[in-house]
Amino acid sequence: MSVSIKEVMTTSPVMPVMVINQIEHAVPLARALVEGGLKVLEITLRTSVALECIRRIKAEVPDAIVGAGTIINTQTLHQAIDAGAQFIVSPGITDSLLDASLTCGVPVLPGVITPSEVMRLLEKGITAMKFFPAEAAGGIPMLKSIGGPLPQIMFCPTGGVNLNNATDYLALSNVACVGGSWMAPADLVDAENWAEITRRAVEATALRK
Ligand SMILES: O=C(O)C(=O)C[C@H](O)[C@H](O)COP(=O)(O)O
Image (cartoon, rainbow, N blue to C red; front, side, top):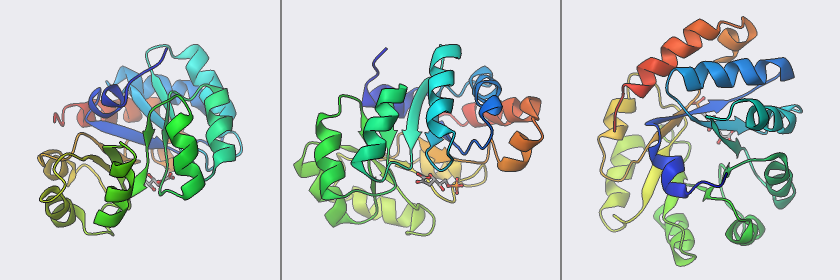
């Protein structure tokens, strides 16, 4: 099933950024998050099993909208889409990745920080972007400042966003959702503590935009 960038950005207020080391964790982890209300999942391609995790979640957790993160070149872009990724997230953008993104057939959320990076993507018709690394790059004041001259851009700030500051990010007019790893940190996943992950997902879902 294909999804729009609007669905990716607005279905849930928080997009879990997932690092999965063990393939057996993929489906129970996705189910735990979806059960808590977080349907849009970003599986980072930081681990060797990530592509297979995307395949399994796509096949076995039909309510999830599964995307691939950490896409840093065209090769992994196409591998992720072949595995079933319904959207693509990248920490930054290159010329070749931008060209491939425009024709890849699924929504993309490229990473930016500066007004010049935003304007370069806007020239290509992209208006939804990941603001990464959000806290390190100036956080809320930076997003407010960019929103002055470039109010048409909607952001998903990620990187250092957590339960304590997510509400303040979500209150901004140019933030559609936030991304973060706090719902499914490595220790809880390793311990297979799906109940706590669902509890955190419920808590994150309540952070309405
Ligand atoms: O892997 C990627 O593609 C990234 O772009 C980085 C992640 O989105 C952030 O590392 C999540 O940040 P935390 O929520 O602070 O853990």
